[in-house]
Image (cartoon, rainbow, N blue to C red; front, side):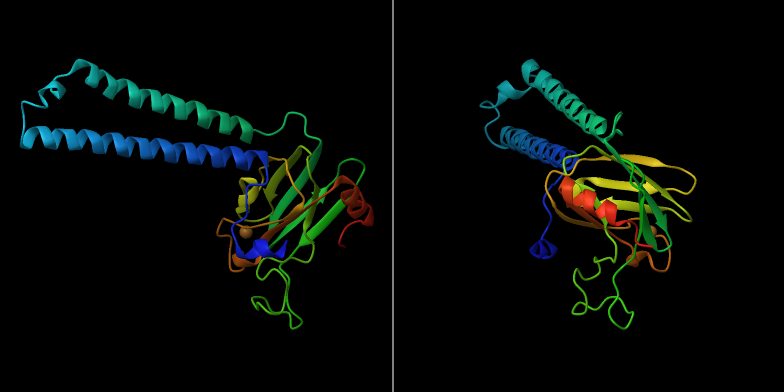
Length: 238
Ligand SMILES: [Cu+2]
């Protein structure tokens, strides 16, 4: 678990996998366009410099011109469909199995779960060392990411995350789950979350929200349903 801290985290949600595949596909299309343009330029330069007679089949060639229109258009339509599918995956669940409320506060997160008969609220603040200071790597686990009370959620559940803010705009971001959602005061935004494997997932507030913006990491622990029920039964942090 702790070794993830020093590396990139992999995709651990259905949404993140989809976004990553879309990213790879767009990269592939980019490489393909680069190759096509390079070959075309090569042919043009070769035909205009030395042996014009040899390459004259490429000038005013209808089928090549048609290809130059159809192939880019087809790749754009292909990417549009793929991105539309990603957008649909980002839509809030119509029938979520669990709803989690995330409240951004200067400068900590408040998590509420009032579902399945539980009433669980925690304030998630950056861990400090014995002297009440932050930012000392040796003094705490999960340097600059560890919090006193993390959000605990079950894996393989359709979790609707409802985010909002009590003061300024924050942003609840978890890269390995493909989530980055603005928390706007007086407004609630929804983001779907299905975590595929148990573990610890970290992110940061991604909207500059004030002096201690750096002190509101997002720290999520994904556990099995049984462990999650035990955590819920233990109750809130205050
Ligand atoms: Cu913030």
